[in-house]
Length: 248
Image (cartoon, rainbow, N blue to C red; front, side):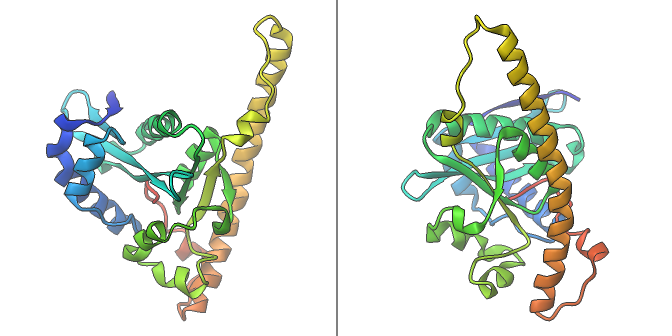
């Protein structure tokens, strides 16, 4: 299968209802929530050039979608509502969509911190490869409108019971300031460039190893949080949660 992944525009607004339907299906399958969105909201994102849409090239079926939102007066940007049509999962499409959404966020808001919440390990891996790091919720935006978007999630009660410090989601953040701390190497120094390339590969490998640790940590955290609200589950049952393709 091959896909066309592009910035959405006015010509795509008639797909808004289908996209909202895919979001609802995805949330039900995962048992956790993408914040529900109205088709008109999605249409506005397309008109503003703040969304990424993907099509399967042969059928021209909507294969995936993601949009960007700003919070805290533009200090933070979230890549939200990532969905991949269930017909095209395990195809690498989620990575392509996230990469373009991240690039669009950096282009429109170069100084903003890019963040997201997710229960999905595949999304955590994609974010990590893009340069995100897992962070506490206190390092994310304190914009109340963002957190109100969690109200449609079935786990919202956990978030409120812990005073917005913990939930089944993991917060991940990319800070542009991290790039400024890296010294760019001249093209006239290929040997040093090669060393830096190897270093980046090692860092990516370390991040992937850390994700496995986060996976075990998330399961244990989930068991504890469920017990706090009177639901007894074990880690194998928790493992069924967050197996979808998306995050908030």
